[in-house]
Picture 1 (cartoon, helix red, strand yellow):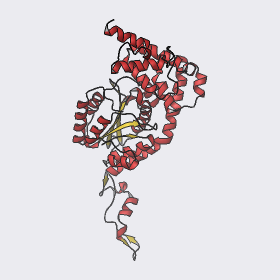
Picture 2: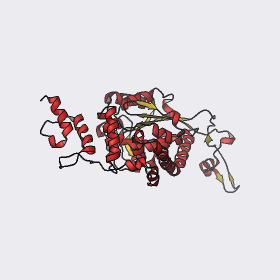
Picture 3: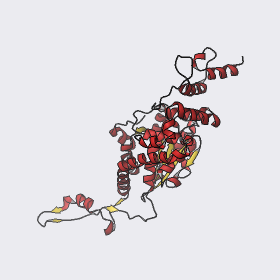
Picture 4: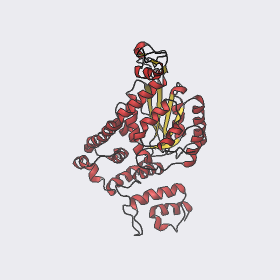
Length: 382
C-alpha cells in the first residue's frame, strides 16, 4: 500500500489502527476531531465521545472547519448535533426556550447557526438576545461611564469656557487659596473640558476579534461592548472579525444579536491580515486605541504581524492584546508570540468582561496599560 492509502485508512479506522502509519500534526488534529465525534475508547467502535457540555466543543468546531472541506464540515456538524445530545435542543423551540441561557450556550448556537432548523431560529435568536441584554444590564453603563470619563479627562484644559467649567474639580484644585477671614475661595485657575462638536469624536477605537472556535465567549462579549461603544459620540468604533478572512462588522453594531449570527465561529486564523486591514483605517494614530482579541495562534505570517504592531506603536497608536475576553479562567494561547508583542509595546494578557471598561478607560487616557494589568492581577506577558 502507498503511504497516502495507509494515511487514509489510518484516518478512517481511528486510533486503534496506529500501527498502520504515523500521522503529522495536521492529520493528528483531523484524527482528534473525528475521534471526538465518532470514536469511543478501547471498544474498537466509533461512538460519540464529545459530551454536550464539553469545554472542547468550541475548539472542535474550529478544527472541523480548519481541517475539512465545506461539504464534510456540514455532515460533521449535523452528526454533532445528533451525537452531542443537542438534537432536541435545536429542533424543539419549547425545550430551547426552557434552558438556562449563558454565554457558552450562545457560543454553541452561533457556531451551529447554519444547522438550526427554520422553526427554531427565532427561539435561538431570543435565547441569544436574552444573554446579550443581561450582559448589557451588567456592563454597558459601566463602559459608558468609564469611556466618557476617560475621554473628558484626556481633553482637560485650564482655559475652559464658563459653560464648560468643572466646578468640583476647580474648587478642589484651588482649596489652598481659601481665605478664612473673608470666607472666600480665590480661584487662580479654572478646570474644564474642551467643548467638542456633535460630529467630532475625540478618540477612535478599533476592536479586532478572532472568531476561531476557541474564542466563542470572547466574540460574544466583544459584540456587546462594540455595540455599546458605537452608541457613544465621544468615540468612533470599528469592529472587525477575522479567521483566515477579514470581515468589517461596523455597519451591524446597532444590533449585537444580528452581529453574532453574522459571524462564522471556527476556521483558521490570519491575524496579520486583520491587523493590516485595521492599519488602513487608522486616521489619527495618537488618538487611536486598537484592541486585538486573540489567542495568537497565528496561521498567517507572524513576522509581518510583529512588524505591523511595531509600526503602529511607533506611530502613537495604543495597542492592547487580549488573549481572552471571558470569565473562563486561564486561556490557552501562544506564549512566545504574546511575549514578543508585549516587548514591542503591545501588552498581552487575558481580561474579564468586568474589568474591560476600566482597561479601555486606561488606554483612552494614554496611561500605562501594562501597569494597570499588573495591579489588576492580570500580569502582562513579558
